Image (cartoon, rainbow, N blue to C red; front, side, top):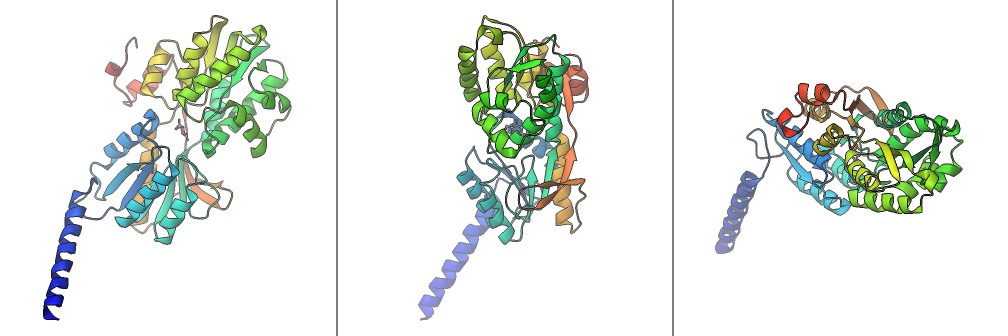
Length: 371
Ligand code: BGC
């Protein structure tokens, strides 16, 4: 009996020791505590946008007294759930999460809520669950509206072929961007400035100023890039192959973000029947800033990730300190009104690229050529 007890206590000591070692090995940043206070989950490392966010989080957290850990879900909801569970096991009190798929992420955040964790949706809303406490975001309707306004402002004449592209339907933002864009484009389609080149569903709906989510889904079904540059190339090639001669020449292209804009721009540039194109983007990715300087992409919507990170971490710290975070409005996620803090966006083209992105200290001039 005594031997058995001794064996058990030795075993417990060993377990404790391994536990302490594991805690010391964690790749967290910030203060010296063994536990992680804030867990951050981002959708993928494969898009520069989210690597930007990771870097800005790291910059902002350098002097934080709280411990944080950033994990990437690599475009998989299963991996995302696993990431959340890993962070819950490390004792997080706040979860900042940008979901791969806004609906599928419900299960992950419900697990977090059950654990007493406060959930902050970051940039992308998590839909149809009551397990989201806060939402920190850019004004995504304004992003789409700014893209569309750029096309309108640069439209010369009438009957300009308009190619529409959108983000992934699993991302609530794709709908917000498209809704914002449609609100500006639709009157200009109705008055004949633009003619839709690549979506029969959008043509059917062209006289409707406001589209329901189902109606937008139908259009997205035809013109989604799924946020994948390669899918964007395939779609653009298919559309150009199918387009009649009067849908070529000088064209306008609504591209939802920089990654897809560069692929679509290259595809259009390679078609000898396209004489010129105006194309939108978003994120101010370095590669797209170079494209703008070189005249290969017309604009981008600059979303200053430093502000989003500051807001998200500010909220997390308020929560950890037992304070109620400040919010500026709410977003309906299909189940609840989520309290939100929203940030404005800036339109960038060749004229103001230096002022907004270099002089503001966001990027270094040496990262570009021909500025
Ligand atoms: C983000 C964009 C990003 C896109 C693809 C959206 O939810 O708001 O900034 O380009 O996802 O990752």
